[in-house]
Amino acid sequence: TLKFEDVKHLMVDRIPSRILNLLRLIGSYGEDKKMPVYVVGGFVRDLLLGLENYDIDIVVEGNGLEFAKYASKQLGAKMVEHEKFLTASLFFKDGFRIDIATARTEYYEKPADLPQVDISTIKKDLYRRDFTINAMAIKLNTKEFGLLYDFFDSRKDLKEGLIRVLHKLSFVEDPTRIIRAVRFEQRFGFKIEEETLRILHETLNGGFLEKVSGQRIRQELEKILGEREPLNAIKRLAQLKILKHIFPKTYFTSVMEKKLENLFNNLRIIRELYKKVNIFYSLLRILLEYYDIDTLKQVIKKYGIPKKFIDEIKATETRLPPLLNMIKYKIRFSDIYKVIGKPSAETAAHIMSYIDEEDSKEYFVEYLKRVFSTKLSISGNYLKEKMNVKNSVEIGKVMNELYCRKLDNPSINEEGELKKILEDET
Ligand code: ATP
Image (cartoon, rainbow, N blue to C red; front, side, top):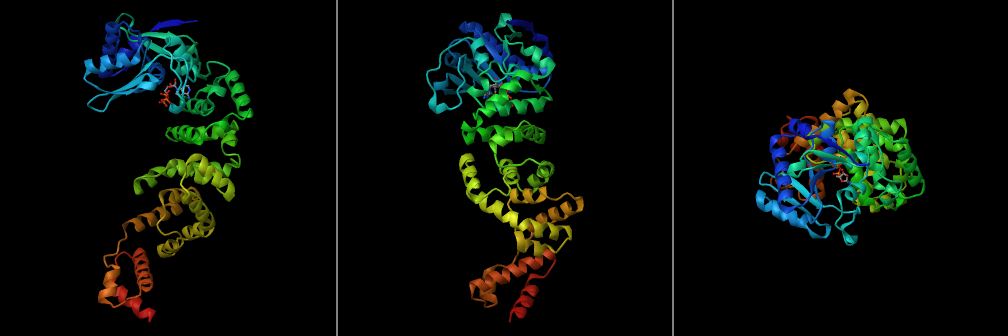
């Protein structure tokens, strides 16, 4: 049963005026074009929760493309159309963006197999969404501006903190919603509603998650990694046995949990050192540890991970035990360098996930910083020309030795040290 609620006062109080004005304008264009327009989804949910969210999704009952064209003209915004979906995005000069869609009945994930999209009503549009809390709309047309449309008792679920699907086949229709349920549950500190949880397990046991492409699973996992507390969601995925259906050979133990905790705690440091770190790969480095090569090959193929991932994970696995001891006993940087050299961001994160003691962690971070800052001012050419070393293997060896000495002692005189190395060699 449809419930209405006037939430205009909430909008006025909580939405920045610039965005509020934009919503009013969009409503007035709805009047001009005689089309009902709504803001829907996460924006509405977060407005009611009192959370900031400026991802504006507009749904139009009628031709959304025609509406988008009109609005873009009136607003002086650039429009990008996705004709097949009957959707469009408007881009403002400052980079702000809104999405406009035509109300429709089906939820399509893969653009490629898009059949005819039928123009529909807002209720049917909301019904195809994932959970009740994401299935509310606020009317924007001037006369009804700020009227909340609640068809599925979403408001109640939001108040009670429940993640509930809209119908029994929801998870079968799109099994990625299983992962989404956990993400929203953990983000808001909600609970997956009882019947929903039952259907979730039924769908899992039916093997439906296994049918989903790696790319779509990866997308949902990456969204979890973008959350404020990803570990909670990952723990919950393990607890509900969802993780087993994604990575069947992973055993989620307290040891693994501790490593993941370290990983997430260390990400800030890793990001400071390396500009880019792939968190998804870093997560998999831990989840896929000690997998056999054949399974690893299947996994990287499924998730579109580069082949060198396998080499890196295997190399780290064998080097870890000696390496951790070297770090623990604060062995010279040059000796650590001989074991791992300059590790990739993901390898560094992997190693650090094993380090629980604060001073060992500091020592390893010190090592990484040293490796980043140590550069030789003397080149191999200098050796060739000034010191008459012609053999390139020899040059490489000598340069490496010089670099190692500088790692241990940044203030060495490179030229003097070079002479010593050459003397020792002969
Ligand atoms: P976030 O705060 O993470 O952006 P969101 O609710 O905006 O949350 P999106 O993934 O951006 O999440 O999706 C936007 C809206 O589209 C959702 O509110 C939901 O109603 C709908 N939606 C997204 N993915 C699905 C799906 N797999 N099945 C059904 N509806 C979906």
